[in-house]
Amino acid sequence: MKKKYCCIIFIISFFTSNSHADIKNQIINNLNKFNSVEFDFTQSTNDKIELGNCILLFTGKIKCLYNNGNKQFILNGEKLAIIQKRYEKIFYYPASKSPLLNILNKDQLIKIIRKGEINNEDKEKIKLVYREKDNRDIVVFFNKKNLNLMGWETIDQFNSKVIFLINIKSINNFYSDEKFEINTSN
Image (tube, rainbow, N blue to C red; front, side):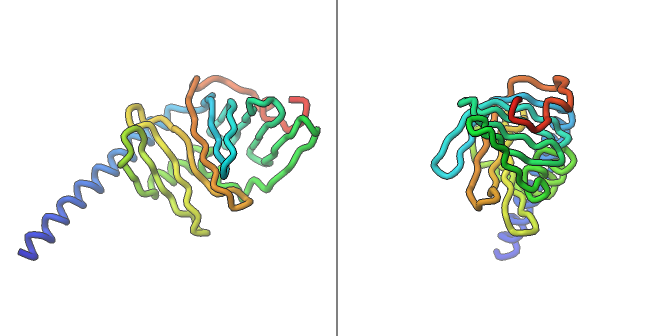
């Protein structure tokens, strides 16, 4: 009886791991079709919710304009900045320490997908959990129907949980590097 039980568990886990590997490969194949994405977002940090629009280049560049018009978030591959237009201030943060670099660079995101654990319990999205070296989790969400990126969950530099959900508007448009320059007049 014990052998039969162990055999059943082995078979179930074998098919589950093959199924997850197949889902991961499908997500990667879909992701490889994307060079840029423009999307609307909902950002939840602690109890604060913000809305806006972003342009993402999968070379590690992103520019987000918040709906209030007074805030921008720019990561241009070298610098991470939050621009508060109302105060004409730019706050710089070390880009190298941001977990966003792992999500916004396609090669790094593919590594996360390959090494992460899939949670397929939600009806609408696939949740992929990747544990970083510092034991922080990066959670990336993908749409179950079309396997498109739906967002991510990270811990920011202030140890706050940030959930960033996206709704893709367009794919593979061209954006010049000038779009990602950091200044208060953008």
